[in-house]
Length: 547
Image 1 (tube, rainbow, N blue to C red):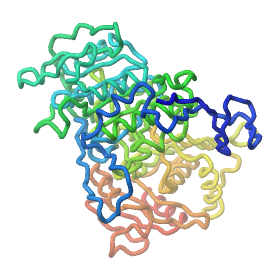
Image 2 (cartoon, one colour):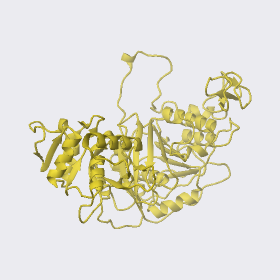
Image 3 (cartoon, helix red, strand yellow):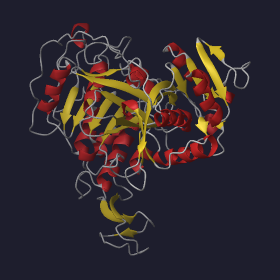
Image 4 (cartoon, rainbow, N blue to C red):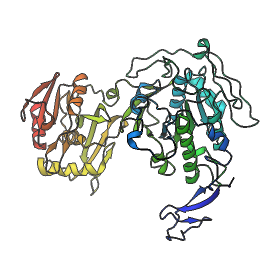
């Protein structure tokens, strides 16, 4: 068997070098050589010492097809059924749930709740499916303490504290019934499925298994807030028969995190570009060959992007970003890429003492509760994926103390703010050249769609004139450079969400108005009075008329 060789490949030209150099000898680019592994023709895959374990994945109903080309018309297209995670908000983001053989990448800031959420998901599924939690950042005892705090200490989750890729792949190939080091068999009797201890196999030679946790989950009383779901940790028992998992095979595996995993075939340190790429590629191959749902936890950089090579996001099926301020109890999960569902879908969670819970009415956390209307606020009906949300947009316009007025935007596009101020001046005669303008989206949500333009301009106008907008008013619509109000996609769903929450008036683009409502005419839409407008001047006239 040929031994894998380490080579250095230029990320610009693809040239190979036997050793690392500061400058590529082929294209003369600097700092572009990246360490990688080049295997011989007879080298085992996916690792030098992992050939025997890799063969055990064959025949488990994975997503990988047989070798050799086939006609597209001869391929049996089967829709892979989604497996619910037990948390409705997460299922919404995933497009219905977890997919067997799918690989998911979850990124987020440290301490935002990634490990907590995944431990809850595994606890939900462990009563019916064999699951594995591989921790490379925490010891088994630390994970067990978190399970106790979340009330999940009786969940039959298999825990493995390991960072070596070959050991993890061996465990995935053997499965829970394959005699894993330190592992305990999964409970099979109905009496033990819901009340079993947390198994803690370590996966390393000579480490041994730690004592399982005992005791029952503590009950917690629910609170009257917009947070939905069961009162304890968001854990809900799953009904039905055991899913299509092979005997002795894991159904769900979590790697926390991919930056801590390393392979012996590379000499670079864990977390390097070459280690992350190679380990992710081998884990993805094993997951698809064995039909295992694999979740990779990824670190993020100071700029908020996922750490490691960009190819990491390309090789996985789903990329989720965990967002939110660690000082706030609310968290957001956004789907950036999803081969099995819609992208840009948003899930809203609240961090409680028993873990993360889904928020049933997300609009409630993005709307401020003012006793009386205040200047500089306007409610926006926006769309996140397939979910309509009502978000309060706040603006503050004040005299500039410096020669150059400031333009600051939080949660909205700062470059677009400067453009909107120019449109407001040119087409509506509202000047703010000598004013500082600050715009903020309440709740820490990021709004990227241009349909927020109209609400931003109305909030700026309200703050500049120091006159609040009428109570119960909302707006949405894109503003063009010519001052026109362009339609927003799926306007009817936005209006239904506003009517459901008790809003009384809406300023909308004329193209989004229901049929039969003429230009400038008010029309009732499920108890909501609509004011269609086609230009920014008309929108300001409507506000003056309502005030």
